[in-house]
Picture (tube, rainbow, N blue to C red):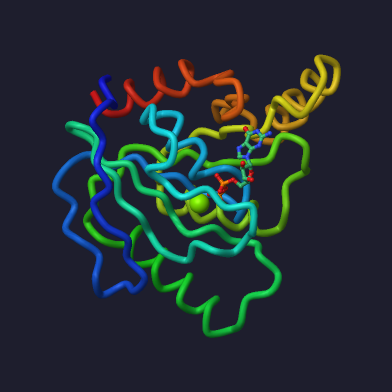
Length: 190
Ligand SMILES: Nc1nc2c(ncn2[C@@H]2O[C@H](COP(=O)(O)OP(=O)(O)O)[C@@H](O)[C@H]2O)c(=O)[nH]1
Ligand SMILES: [Mg+2]
């Protein structure tokens, strides 16, 4: 899979604007600040095609990036405490619109901060993906922050919790796990 020469297509903030799905889509979900944009940049081999922010809760839009035959879709983050009810409703309708359309969604990468434990929001997101029968794989982000022992413990924690879902440790800092993620992506696009 060649993901070079990617281009930013557009950013959508309301459900009425979503473009038609004209090629296979791979989407990325997870709490705000978990590392979605950093992962997309790493996969696309770009420094900042997706905007990385150290302030959580900044991106309540769906962003589309085209890389050859596939579309990468950066979904709005959840779990940010300081959002208004109106903002929450907008998040709900955006996500429902994205997942309920007749889109060619091949796989969702569900991002989880490897250092944390499953949050209520993560659980709801995973249940949502299951209920829509969207195939998904878990990417355990920021694995550079743990030492070897902690890493083994946390991988075991997430794998036990997620049972037969693929669990992929990843670091946007040093590239650990990138090739495994690309292999899975490849197998779902074919
Ligand atoms: N150490 C480390 N920091 C990361 C990693 N991925 C993301 N970050 C940092 O986490 C913050 C949020 O990242 P971002 O990609 O914007 O998260 P998003 O809100 O899910 O899109 C930024 O400060 C990133 O530099 C990683 O793998 N390792
Ligand atoms: Mg982001």
